Image (cartoon, rainbow, N blue to C red; front, top):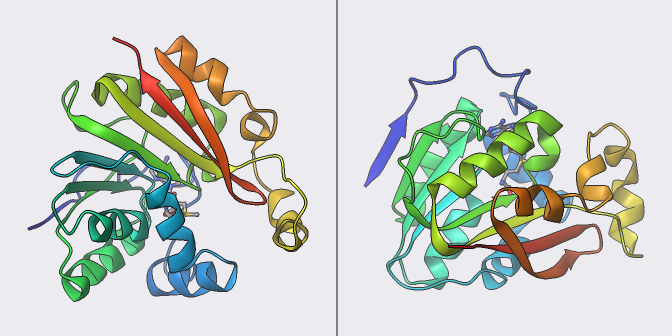
Length: 221
Ligand SMILES: C[S@@+](CC[C@H](N)C(=O)[O-])C[C@H]1O[C@@H](n2cnc3c(N)ncnc32)[C@H](O)[C@@H]1O
């Protein structure tokens, strides 16, 4: 099944986050992401870091071309419900093409992660991969509030984001990109405090790359 909801966010690009439009979105995004080390290996590592279970309902915030959702679906043999939300129509259009090509069932929504079109306690898992670093501090805080609302009790939220680097060649390559990003909360590890204020408690964290960390939070009941 493929559902694309385009009604919600016509004027919010650039205010709510970086717009991955035609030159930087879709097919081009996947091409450049792979060159920068965000290819299949990275997405499989993200999926492996998540507490996956068959038949779960997963929400991916800032899903881009939904490589994370496709990796999760592959790991679970398609026995999962994937919902992906992104600001960019270009990214979602290409996610839809990848969905048909790979035979992966995706539900795609256009919108901003700080205003989610879902009812309370809808999801067993929420994940976001290198998308918080593309938004503002205000949007990130709103998104964490919304995640706490749409997540079921005792379920998990995974923030995969650029973080203070441990040494590695890819860190040196990526430093120029960080200089233009609003990453202070991640860099200074403020997410655990912001999440705790929203009833999300840090359980575990691992580096997936030398400058990308996955933090796993559980919603307290
Ligand atoms: C670097 S890409 C990451 C895409 C994907 N998660 C991945 O791992 O490949 C960041 C994505 O976040 C999206 N984005 C930025 N601000 C957003 C917001 N406020 N709400 C939803 N998506 C947003 C962009 O459109 C872009 O597709």
